[in-house]
View 1: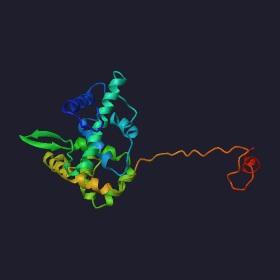
View 2 (view 1 turned 135 degrees about the vertical axis):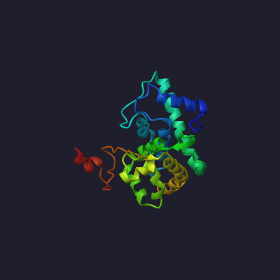
View 3 (view 1 turned 90 degrees about the vertical axis):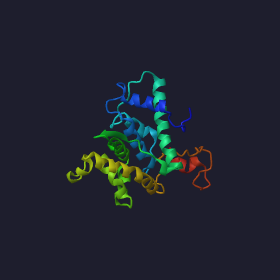
Length: 230
């Protein structure tokens, strides 16, 4: 199965059930939280490698892991998560306006209302991987577009802001705003996005004692700079 192939409904359910199972850590993300988390990583200010973000799927400290049956199961679930991430990435690359956040829906007094809180928690967790890099967005032209995510996803908000999220119908409106705002947030970061930081080790050729000294003196290495190493 290719990593760029989207999850089928059956595979989606398989991953969902595993995340909710007893063999996943208690603090493991749910599918909607995971989708928000992956979205923040996909559109944010820096490229983050899976080796860093994947462990936090199982718990905020990144130190927990599922109780795998065997290595084959671990490979299977990790593969599903990676394909879930690639589905997000490919959507933004190909058609960002068609991106749909994975929100929950609840029926209240006979009315179907969207609940984006878990998705926003996940998005906020993704931001917390690079809090310093995300900081500039709050002073940018898209700061107001980020506000619904802040209201529903931040660890703490002002007491005066609680009224905007405690009413399910107001929270529903915030969710609709998020879906409309995400493409613009993606476009904001696109030209600013930094690649993953890589450590490059440069291998210098070794100089033999009887070779010409690389300093350009014309002397043999053992009689020039090499003498200092003895």
